[in-house]
Image (tube, rainbow, N blue to C red; front, side, top):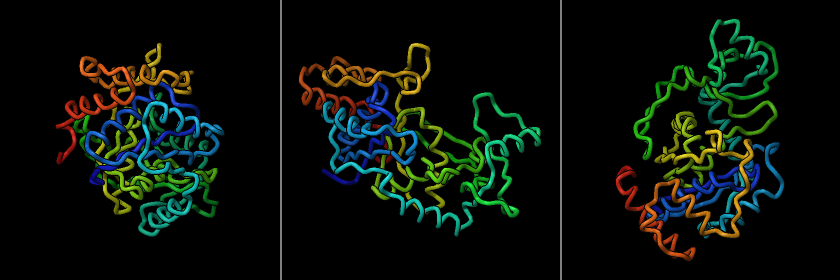
Length: 300
């Protein structure tokens, strides 16, 4: 096994895996195996209030039932406070981050006063109130200074060329929240770099985070991985299947059936996946994925 490729699956333990999360897990595992690389599991429990006690162990058990075993012991974000603080300190020292005293109400009032219109389901773009100091108020959160950054361009292995003007579409985003919780954007960038992740395979719902993460990587002098965003599993109402809209926990008593359903979402050809045992199916799936994505990875 070569270490030139390192992939990861990084679930949040807000509940057990469901059919949609297995699609992302399987895709990341297949991509690592197809490239002869390492596959890691990281429990993203940095947002403590949303985590369900015991869900992490349920998730690890579901993955094991499906034959998706990491090459190293899993990592928990909640045990990694020091690296996040170090990264924030570096961003503050370099002028890429600043403290913010604004509440949600303050931000809404500033947006309204400016006359800016917020899309009904769009991002609340921070108006930059605290960019030049707190004016005697206490810091509540810390933000990344996106203002002045260029439009971020990248090529997604599945979605193709992408771009986002983070300053205009997102604004100065939070790195550490007012409740002292570390923001997903900072934690994931630090963890991916520390674990040597070269390729990120995840659901398409997370594609919008990519530009923010690339800005952080650049500001911290970290490498930018390759990205591949997979199709989403949709609920009956056409919305993304999620724990928030009542997605059922994955029943892994019949793991082969679960994997076959996930493979269909990923477009794996059923005619090539004829094995009726777990190990044989996964082996065939790796070959099918290799053929399907051979030209996707830059430099492959």
